[in-house]
Length: 437
Ligand code: 5AD
Ligand code: SF4
Image 1 (cartoon, rainbow, N blue to C red):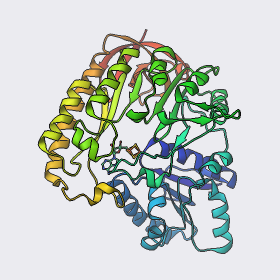
Image 2: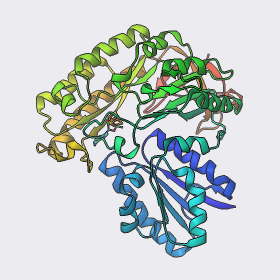
Image 3: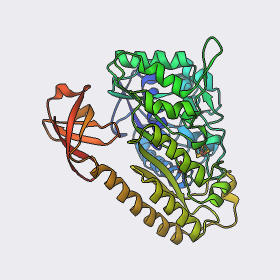
Image 4: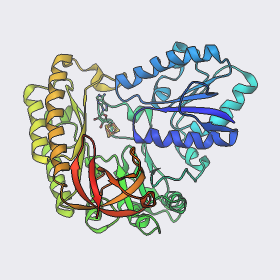
């Protein structure tokens, strides 16, 4: 058996891709290992979204160079969005790398490995043949109580700060039949919750064999009928693609969980316009109202960028104001980071690091307070928890509420894979504690 170490950076899509790469290499005799030391192959599945994420790859490659000095046979692969964006550059800066493979071509890994074994040298593949990849990936995955399922990839929105349209290519949806077949296979393997993934997942428009186009709401309805599937989630959504039927589904489809990640990025119309978000603060707030009308208890989360070029104190205050109005259950917030090739990187009025830090601190303080408030509001309530795994302490199981909050409870391991009512008792830093009801 050869050892494979995969290190994943970035989003859930990358986590999904990493698992698929491991599946793909299993027939070649590679078994997962949890450290690079002693591995026969290391894959860095990289993220290019912010500068820091991309830099980490080169420092990790520096460390791996020493491992390769000790083990000449070690294969080093760089996959994911840095591979897509910087292809040749990686091989130039880090000659210890054997393979570079983009997010749309990793199904060709076995063939690339065989080519290197035969001919030596390096291999690079970063095309965009979106359809081909899913056709050649194995359908079955390891048994997970909650499993990711990619339904859509790529982005045509071209927010001016973002590299995704360049690294992940144009929007593309998988046919509904393929998605449903994968979901059935997962359910047969013990999966109870499916998390549909896509860079713009709510723009999903898969075309079936009869030529009809399916919306995400319709796909969720069909998934809800699969025996064994108890919960459905989806991420990440764009406010522009939140269709009426999807909003309605949050009221009608009982398996669709009351949780929605709906990034707004900023509360200032001037910034939203400069970001090419194609919505205003007001249209976002109206949208939130309509979603809450369909599902009043829904947990809303978002992404924010502070210090976008030209952001004034008043623009930032508009973001704080929007946050106060919406009341989020959680959020990710970032300092604007210049990404090569994106329009905003060339903007003149870049914001100083000092101001970015101040704004991020203030925003994160507010968001964290809201997150704590949201979690505290569940104390004393009984919630259905889907148990996913054993806890850190013996005799403890860990699961999630419908609002995606992790819950620890004392209970039998036989609870794993099932949904049980839990009375929420207390909040710890990142999770809730409860007692089986
Ligand atoms: N700088 C900072 N944050 C960014 N994001 C995307 N691009 C950038 C950038 N250049 C954030 C956005 C997006 C999330 C995935 O990452 O908030 O929603
Ligand atoms: Fe990036 Fe905007 Fe597309 Fe989201 S919608 S992936 S932020 S370009």
